[in-house]
Each structure stands twice: as C-alpha cells, then as structure tokens.
Image (tube, rainbow, N blue to C red):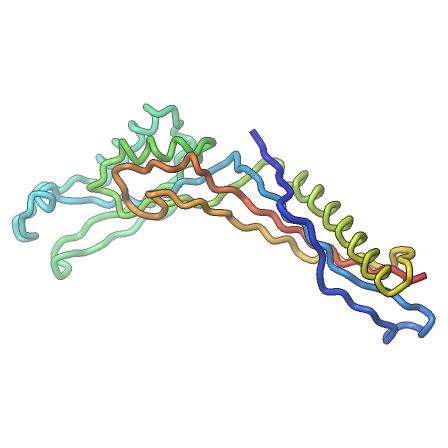
Length: 231
C-alpha cells in the first residue's frame, strides 16, 4: 500500500533583476518546492548481537564466567526465530563482524550486525519479542525505501514547477506586471529524509516494542528554480 500526501507546496527566494541581461529584458526568478510523504515498502531493521556468558546474568563476577553462548548458537537461534515469523534467510544480511573485550581484556567475545529486510513495520514488534535480549547490543530501524521513488520524484518535480509558476504570477501581479515565457529552469538536488514517529523501542532495547503502528515515513522534498520573462 502506497500513500502519497502532498504536505506542502510552496515557493521562496524571489529575485527581480536586470543586471546580467539587457535593461529591457526584465525577469522574475523563483524556487518552487514540493514535499511528499511516502510509506516505505522496504524496511531495514538492524540488530547487533554479541556472545555472552550465562553467568553474567546470574550476578556472578567475570572471574566465575564459564559458559559462553557462542555466536554460532546465537545466529542459528536468530535465523530460526525469523523463519518462524515468515522471514526468509535471504532477507537477513550480515553487515559487520567484530569482537569486544571485558574484565580488563581477559574475556573476549564476537559480535555481529544483522540487516533484516522487512515489508511490514509490525514485524519489528514480533522480532523484538522473540530475540534473546541477553545477546542484544542494540536494535534500530535503518534505511527505508520505496520501489516507486522515481514516480514520486517525477510527481514532486511537476508540483514544484507549478508552485514556482504560481508564486511568480502573484509576485508579478503585486507589481502590476504579468509573467511571460519561461527563460530558464534549474533543477537542484532533491532532499530525502525520514519522518520519525517515535515508539518505545526506537533505537533502544525493549521487551515490548509496541508502537510501530505509528510507522515512519519517507519525506521527499523536490525544488525547481525557474526564471520567467516579465511582460
């Protein structure tokens, strides 16, 4: 399900000049901007897990740690849990492998970062419920994507051009003149950001990650600079 909501269409940065043209060649130049809110259909959920000793959760001192849960066991359990949620093995990618030390370097463990590709925010709650919290370093939402971004960009640029035209028209009217032909169009870079609606689990470990019904969205901002002749 895709949602396209034009939150705001506006324009700014108006210039009236004849400096670099002949005095009779007057023009008005504006930048039109459009903003579009898009629901992602590809969600990357990032989890970092580390090896641990069972004794560290029993209140014992590091010198008494004996039973290490290996990364092989932790990863196998994670993939089994994800499979049980209908998430295929191909959707799980290992991003980073590292190691860490504790007890002044006498104890060493391995850590791994997993990038899990999802298409539904509700799966984040379910993953949080089943993953072994003893192994979790952090869990967070990573990159958000939509497979129709090119179409959204096209629609956004058209909206920005229309915003520029409307802005130029009323600015010119306020000065008692009319907008004529387009003299130049400049296409600045687009801006893409994430509109975050916080949940209790945003970027932290939680036993109850409820709140992802309030999903995050992608915010696409397009701008177009247009120069119009003045009649």
